[in-house]
Image (cartoon, rainbow, N blue to C red):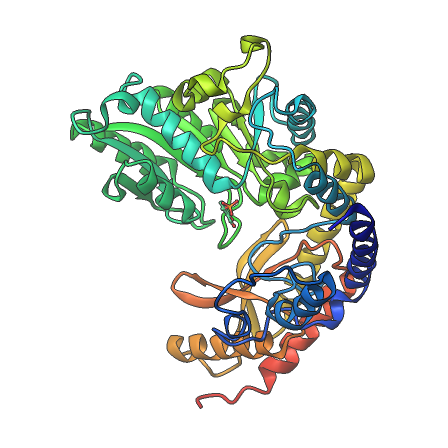
Length: 475
Ligand SMILES: Cc1ncc(COP(=O)(O)O)c(C=O)c1O
């Protein structure tokens, strides 16, 4: 494809993208294809000869689009948001055209220096103390893995990387029973062993209980284990609960344990000073992560990982074969040493575009609106006689269930709510996901997409009520 053909197609694609943004509301939110339906339309072998772009694009519309779940739909209330935005998409287009691989300062100085500055902008925006240095990871899971690996090295006197874990004391990791599953996965990946992950009970607010944490640590020390890391959550996935960082941090400081804070979703809300209470005690943390790719209008992937001691992270991950040496040495940052993958996309550019385009005030207004609409909706749900709020509003998340008068059997309530969720999602107008709260099947409501307005939230509530009230009871 020459540059003239590229220009022609790119202009047409940009028109398509703008139209998509305007009409995304007309699509069913969740893809309606059956398993295998997309694969059945893809040839089993690659084409030997090149094909015209027109034919490829026609198939994109015919085969791919029906198999897309529309995360940018204003009625996407499932999981957590992954909100993209026009300035972010524009930056991603430039990033793709540059195609730079930004593993070393030398392989694109602008990418490295932009990343350092953007992460410090984010640090200031969310009120993290000075002294935290940031890096962009692909995901919060990767940041948690880096935290566990660094904690592992620190707890073993930097011996585990060299000797393996075999002869070293058994390390233990602590997290609440509400923590996202990525911590458990990372414990496995880091070679620490799932048996050494302690699941600490939570209180009535679903927050980790410091007394239970302290007791578990003391029991482990008495049993010959070496506590290495606590992963605390600010905004858990199920219910949005917040762990008490100050009390947890004091326990970690007493026992010299690494404290990682996972604020993957809720971290964005820290740009609003009224929510900064969530990180009271953050000065005790060794590392912290939040995902602008969830709730800060920045395309996936962009996970902001902050560390108090970059040298510890680099010491854990650094490896320097001859072919990666560069003459700048210590004068510059080579981010390859700050994450597991060597190769890195130019991800700071989209942050630069987003933050400059909206301004911090513009971002604050949007998040504050999401939080207001969610609170308003939760009040309406609480006021409805046949519904109940099952976990309180945390920022822009709460959960609820349908509970019509006279139905008290837990299994019947679970069945009703599961049926309700499937009916809503199969209908295509909105998309929600489920959770279990105190054993009961509940429906999560999470607000945060860029195109979502108050009217979408309100229309979703109307639809939920109408749909629920048609469900046969005891069927
Ligand atoms: C609280 C929390 N932590 C971690 C993750 C994992 O995020 P990622 O997909 O960036 O690895 C999620 C994902 O939703 C989450 O909600």
